[in-house]
Length: 576
Image (cartoon, rainbow, N blue to C red; front, top):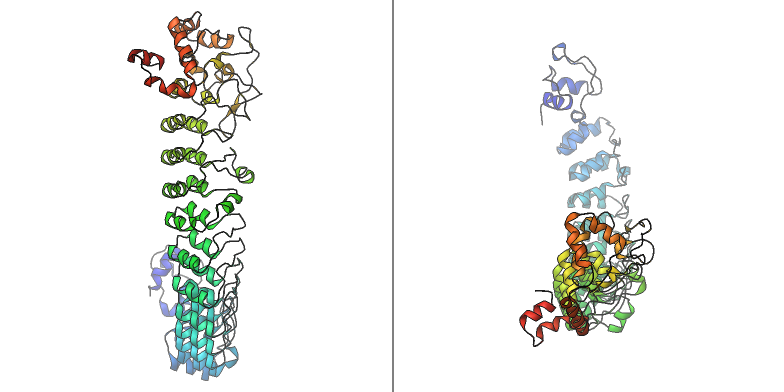
């Protein structure tokens, strides 16, 4: 124990007082003064650390003689402290059996008195695992069914502490084996969670119900599957527990085992006819959650017993979940099992996402997962099924590798956004700050000519319309946004010259509208770009455009295979 002056110094930050311990104890309930030498004049109460009840002190120290003397002198041993504790509670929680005997002999009527938390002496003795005290209290008539404020019984706490001997003792004295705590858990639930077979057997012999449910609808078998305890699970199944019971959210023990990656439990449940096609209330099957968590071995096992028609009715494929959570190995397993790589999310599931995504490929592209996207594309996934094309996502992210991958698998480079119409390809709008990416798209057939079609032409343009970005990062305003409107936005206009210059390489004779000319006139260095746009274009340029047009957008990559001189091939590919 710390000296009194150290305690006081810690409490009040003062130097060592001229005060001794015996004085503090003698006047424990009275204020006192420091001597003048301490420089403290106000009255300060004695610290609570020093106010030790002599009864409690005797109990903690096991001073049986002192406690007996207090009983003989008529000391009140039924007085509660501020937590509602009696000396009997102190004796039970500190494991002082002899003190318990003395106190109960003097005041047998307090044996079931509760603390402020409704804890009886028996409950406290069980929690502290003092077997002799538990036996003493039970033999003297303690009620083993009384619960605390959380409605937990002494038996429940004994199961929580995995004390087999104490459980057996409580059961022998009539403890309520099927009592539910405030959250609905029973003693059997607790024993199962701790994988204690011995206690489970004791509880079952004492009449424990096999499948009680807690407030979430969870049975002991569900808890065993959730925690991965095979031995207890097998014991419950052998005794007739339902392997297909469902919790309040519709989850089955099999679903929960798949969720937590317990392969051995999955095998055991399937061998006992667990239904792999029983959905949760959210419509998900065990294979969905296993794919989401990336447990590819479990997914491989579930593929054998899962109905693909049932998967389709769920409105979401395991492929979606594997792609969304970057579980590439699982994705590969599902693709090899011939799950439809072009499966779409149902309308209600798609509506959860602001961009209304529908395909597994979209998830892979959004995550910039090139490997996953490559697997899906090589397995036949179409890059043009989503409302907001995955190519636009990749372009917006500036992911060159992903853009190339999608274009190689025939992504539509001239795609537009139905909800945000423009007079030119939306892909151009997203890569105005990435000229190399813009050139790559133009090389692969992106329509540059549409960028020079303006309804106002050389006439003065009306005031700039308010072009803004929404939550998806889309620039839009009134229907039919034109290229000259987008390029005039403050964040892009300083790039206007190089963008127009790049586009002119992929068009023939065009006339720039007054707004584009205005941009080119704003910088002296861009005068050469303006001259480049003035008709007529060179015959070489017009011939190149004609040949590329005849080849077609999806065959432009095959120009390199034509039996032509390398120099001509480079010219046709804009690599001169």
